[in-house]
Image (tube, rainbow, N blue to C red):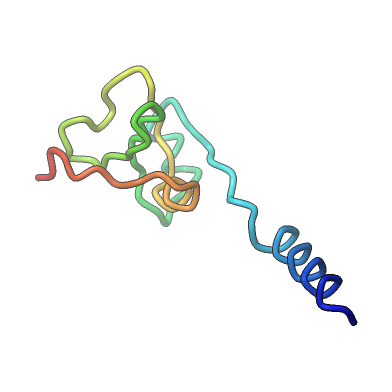
Length: 87
């Protein structure tokens, strides 16, 4: 097998099998998110800032640019935890 053909095959396998992110399922209410992910922590995801907040943080459930999501889905989608207002 030629090296360029092998490289194309490896690239195709990576694109098909490992590069897709898990879908993010946003919810308007915290209870809906908790039913969706019973074994995970529900966080408030601010889409504008790209950060998520844990319950107890000052900006949890605040603002118009956010929704409740599962923490694992937020992490897998590339969102970062906010360190502001940590209690």
